[in-house]
Length: 384
Image (cartoon, rainbow, N blue to C red; front, side):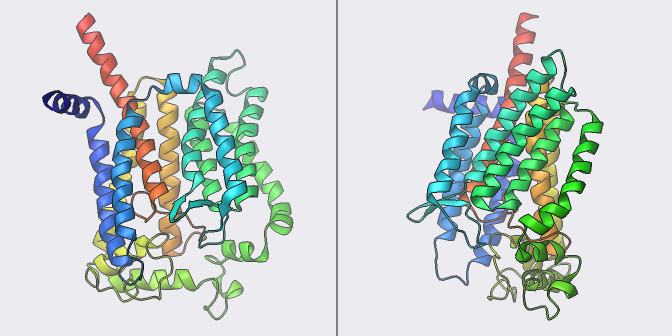
């Protein structure tokens, strides 16, 4: 027992304990809001599931922080095989979630969202690819290098969208990709080329590949009177979210006393619109606290990468920072009506075991960067 305690103390000294505490604080804060948001539901499993996910997430944080990513990515074919198996399983056994996307695999009452795991493996594989391209004679900004990076992203993005029709979570892959390519030193001209190609492809994608419902989803935040004149259709969710946030004022209507949080007016209030519940019941101060916590986590991830002294570690941290930044921006944006509603949860706060566990696992990999850095510093001091 004493040896176990010594190992725990040594781990906390070497690992990124502040990052772990920030993540736990955000998850516990989220559970407080989830409890209020789900009180009106008949099913009482939400809190036990989220509590178990938090405990499992802590285990994953510790385990993933001890993984040597260099050894893991050297065996990249296992990661590729894992991704292929996940996508095949989603194609064969995937079921539609509440939003209509085929993005879940369910075993009885247990649901797994493969996209959460794919984000981690995608970042690891992309880290290896960018590192090898940086070390090659042509460098990362050569035509072949840029083309191979684009193919890597397009394959995962395209296959995932075709199988799941979940364009919202697929966009997270785009921001992981962009953040890592930028951190890897890809020439800015390639980003401009990508934007130009996207602009040229938009009319074709808009008319041939997007349904009327999807087009209206995108237009709703900017032209609500055009797609939903009476406000009772596609803009209903966001209207209720904005009303909830506005009615909360500075300090809120009181915990467990929000009109929409405790009623049935606000849809997906424990997942997509958890931020609106917080705003209605605990006010602007609570919303500012949520954004501060998430900002501190993102800053901690970036600082860990910048201080690592390793290009590989910087790439990984940049990818996960990009992932969190986009999810936070998109979720809060759709709650306040400035971005389309695409079903992206608020990291650490929204209900969802897959999302919470995967977020802790990703932060565990970031903690591993700091752990290895401290290990190297200790070795240098001993050798000196």
